[in-house]
Image (cartoon, rainbow, N blue to C red; front, side, top):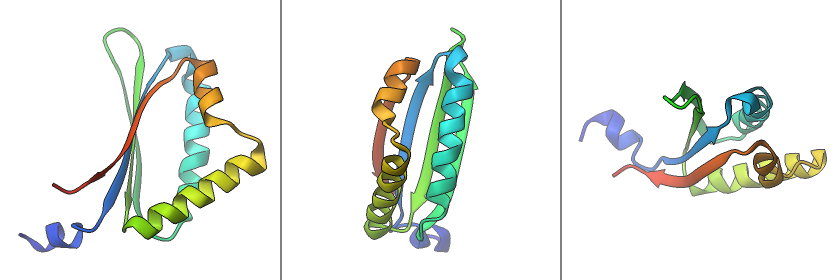
Length: 111
């Protein structure tokens, strides 16, 4: 195992995939950027990426990948983002439903 592989072994990744109607992309990306900025402030956030592409049907695919140093960092991130949403009165599930966004979200670790 090389040094970078062993260094990243404890990392946990939150990978979320969203299928977003083209007309909803501006509003959706605005919220993604707000969340990204919030998560960047949490200790243990090693990298925070937002990737996108447009598929053959014209729908936009957005993937967010956040690498965390471990379970404690993920717990802190969850607390931080929930507090930010509560302060704003923001309901992510209702927001995505309103925009017609489909999501597949989960935690992953190095295999």
